[in-house]
Image: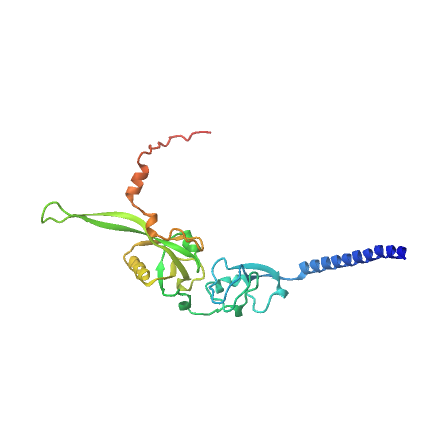
Length: 259
């Protein structure tokens, strides 16, 4: 009896190995046939768990490459990801799950993107390459450059004081959220719709009307540093005089030095 049991063990192992080999071969054949003919597509999935009512901002979604036949109904192609940015989730979605059209409130008005207690204004920003790459959902600081006029009182009674001016650059608003690109642009440009408190909205519009040059500085998402605009100071010509103070002048040689 013991001998028959011992003889069964190799037989069982042989059957298990044979089944494993068949499974591996079938899987390899399936993968090769899939790679040869199946079309792959990139779809939108959640980078992290998203709650109902949460706005979809940069970093909330990512792309996932899957077989076209495996894509769920109403899956959102990665090429359409701009369409869902700054939209609100209608239902919660877990990390790694597909985001489909029924999950979000696509087609909502611009007013739905404005923050609570905020107003939206359209502002022109001059920032070169940065403005061409800004997208809805980005947070920026707005830096202004303008001429500040100052009047010095005359020491002689009855005489008008002398007026002087200096060019300065300083932070106007340290943290502003972009909610749309103006003029229906899909990407890039220099006109932006910003959401900000009413006092800041009217101040920014007044600054633009006064001809103050406004430029953006891109902030890192969810960065809570440097929110006090006074900590960054201001820059004027004295800044550069101080920069040059104590530094020896460099003389450029007529002939470049050879290494």
